Amino acid sequence: MRLILLIVLAFILQGFLSGLLGDTIPPPDLIYLATLLVVASLSPFIGLPLAFSIGLLQDLLSAGYPGLHAVGLLLAAYAYYRLSRLVHWDELAGQMVILGGSFVAKWLGIMLVALWLRLGQFNPLTLWSVMVPEMLLTLLIAPLAFWLYQQLYAGRSK
Amino acid sequence: MSDTLLRRGLLAGLLLLGILLATITRQSAPSLPGEFAASIAPLFGFSFRLGQNTRASLAAIFDRRDLRAEQRRMQAELQLLRQENQRLTLENRRLQATLRVQAVQGLGVVAVAPVIDDDPSGLYRRLFLGAGAAQGLRVGMPVTSANGLVGVITEVTTNNAVVRTILDPESRVGVRLAGAPGRGIAYGAPPRMLRVEIAPEASVKPGDKVVSGALQGLYPAGITVGTVEQVLPVSPGALKKVLLVRPAVQLSLLEEVQVLRPL
Image (cartoon, rainbow over all chains, first blue to last red; front, side, top):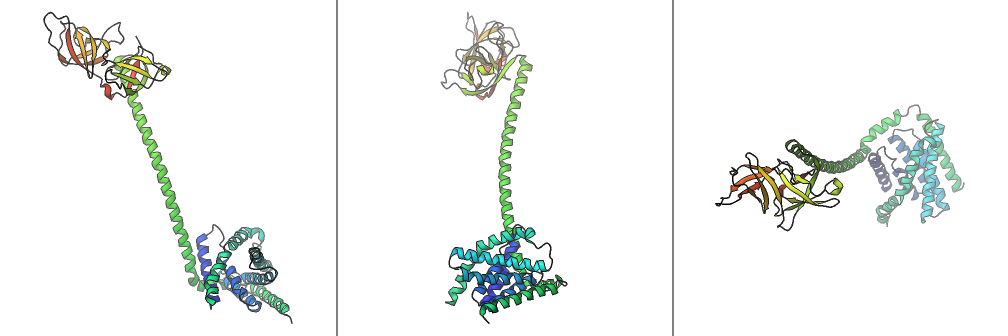
C-alpha cells in the first residue's frame, strides 16, 4: 500500500513541478526516483515488472507511446540491481554511480524504443537539452528524496 | 535455472513486451493513451495546475518587485528633473534680471555672480560673491541688480570677490535726484538706510527717487539707489540738506548680482 502511495505521490509532485517550472527548465524525474525507491526494497522478479508497469502508467498518463517509459524504467531498474552489486550504496560515490548509471539506462531504454519506432526526433542530439538538466536536477534532489523516504517509511516500518 | 538467467529472461521478456506494445499501439497513439490520460487527468491535473498557479504567483511577486524598483527609479528621476527644473527656473530668473539690467540701465554686464555670503561682522555691510578673477571680475567694478545699485567690488580672489555695498559705512556714492536738480553724496548708514547730503536748495520730499549721478565716480549714472524716506530739517546757515534714503535693493535678499564693466 505504501508503495502505491509513494508512486501516486511521485506523480502528483511531478505534475506540480512541471507546472511550477513550466518551459524554463525540465523538471527532475521524480517518478524515476520513486521507482528506484520502490524496487530497492523488492526482489528483481517483482521490481522489474513493477518498474515496467510504472513506466507504462507514465506513458498512458502523458498520452505518449505505451512502452517508451516502460522500457526506460525497466532498464533503469535493471541497471540499479546490477550496479548495486558492484558498488556500495552507503557511499556517496556509490550512490552517484548507481543513480547516474540507472538514469543513463533509462534514457537508453527510451532511445531504444524510439529507434525501433523510427521516431526521428527522439535522439540525443535533439533531446540533450532535456536529458542533461533533468539528470542534473534529479541527481541533485535525489539525496533529499531518499532522506524523506527514510523519514516517512523506514522510520515507520521499524 | 539460475536466478541470473531468470532475471535476464524476465528483462528480455519485458523488453520485448514493451517494444511489442509500442509497435502495436503506434497506429492508435496518441489517441489510445490520450483517451486514458484524459480520463485520468482530473486526478493528477490539480497538482499541475497548483504548480502553474504557484509559478504565476511567484512571477507576480517578482513582477511587483520589478515594479517597485521601477517606481523607485522613476521617483529618483523625477527628483532629478525637479532639481533640474528648479535650476533652470533660477537660471531663467537670473538671465531675465541680466536682460532687465541691460535694458534699463544700458550697461555692459561682465558677469552674473551668485551671492554666497554676508559680512559676518555686522559692522560692515559687505557681500561675498561666488565669482572672482577667473570669471573676469576686477576691483572697482560696480555691482548692481535689477532693482538698483548694490555696491562696488573691493577685493578679488581667483573665484571669489568682496562687494562693499552702498550701506557700508565706508561707502560713498555720488547721487542726484531723479525728478529734480540736485547732486549729493550718499553715505552708508547701517543697518538699512543711506544718509544723503545734498545742496540745501534742492527741492526734495519723501518718496522721491535717488539715482547714481556722479559723472566721474565709481558708478554709472542713472542707476536707482533708493527712495527718500525722510528729509531732516535744515538748520539755519547749514551747508547741506540731509536725507534718509531707503535703498532700492534689499541686500539681505540678494541671491545674484550683475557685475558691470568699470568706468
